[in-house]
Image (cartoon, rainbow, N blue to C red; front, side, top):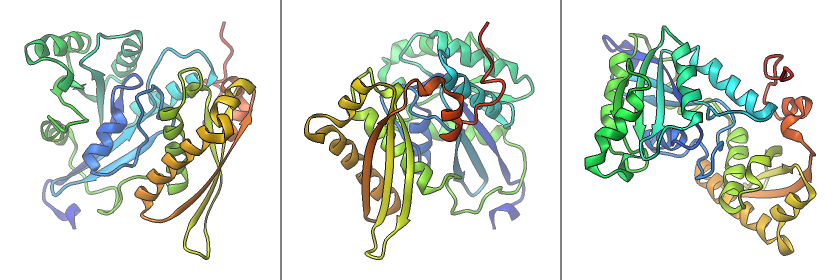
Length: 310
């Protein structure tokens, strides 16, 4: 058993940063398989998810939390609150940034949240450096390092895998000595049903225009094994306006079919089984600012996230 290894280390690492800096891509790459939805559009991740990397000398439990951003509705407040709770309850905080871009207001919001966790060990993970010319890389790192000087910077590309061995070594160096928290064969804490919801939303983000994605939510209505060996999955896609419903369905339901095909292929790849996926679309007006609806979707809108703005 790995936990019997002398000086074995284990602990939790929060991947904190603004939306779309590559947190989910990093987890998928490190684990060698897809457990988290990714998209070129921000706020793909809307829930806390563990990615468990078990090595001979350490078990690193990555906590991929929602992107931290300047919120404009109760959903955004809830996502930020989830990220804040994760950051306050881990061994290491990895502030992840996009080295190919200038720091934004969302980056500064994430940085401030990281700074507030004063007793946590911190790393600065500068991602997407494959997009930065080599001669410009030192300046790109310094732009962010100057904002969080006490965090050790690590340069990576989650997409190509560059720098991930250095990142892993830096994390292990900071981890406490502890036996494993999870069995060697566990890679995440979410059930297939929950991951299926994220994969459907990922497929929708991939195919839909800019005005729809943030107003889209997915609910899994049914997830069960059938006698014919297939897994039957029924899901509802919620949008905020009738016009968005038309966009999601498309002419002759072509867009919905495209979303369903993409999602089904990813779900079959994940579960190594045949999937029968049935999708429908409903309008839930203003759902992102509806605490009851958000709670039903599992966003856990608390008193803090539900407070009225003054």
